[in-house]
Length: 276
Image (cartoon, rainbow, N blue to C red; front, side, top):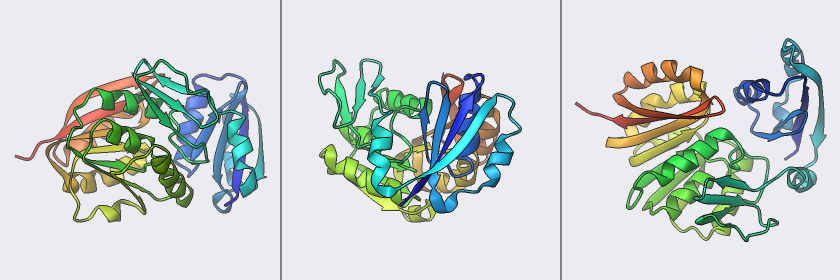
């Protein structure tokens, strides 16, 4: 699959880079690389719409925009050029196979970098990873909705989950997640290709959904149907300023708000399902 790379140069990096990540994620862009001058974002070539250039032109913080097609065989060079190790405090190191594996973190996850969301570089993946260390996953059945690279599914298994179901709607992410599951010697993860319709008839103790605000709102009803009573729902992929909208929508389906964690204005929210 070929990808279109959108390269954005910014006059002012913050908060505009994070704002543009949110805007582009809602328009189907799947992965992002922070550069010294701004942001690179990627979307399957067949999904690229030239109208995005005019839409982004309204942002005064943007200095310049250009785009190019990255051929399928060139993805590795494009990612390795910018792919740095990720460290979640002293708990977790997220490394590519070409990185130095000598680290001080308690746990290491290897990710083969491809053009799928969730390498750990984004604040929301970092927040979700940190929160999983603070939960008891022993013997739990976990859903990692929109798994991307599979990093949160892999972490869930390493933290003791009994089973992990990891669907994604993107073929590239599906293939990459399967590769990373094998790379980390995981045995209890089922990677699937598809959307929330795949969840019918299943049930979980924990749902992790690091997607975006609009998709989360659409999925709350389905999450409520498959999450067991007193189970935890972790959602991320949105700004701290979106929390009231998400809280109000989640409460319609029996979710009780527990806490919010933030990093650089991005947020992760935790709910508990409470059937009365």
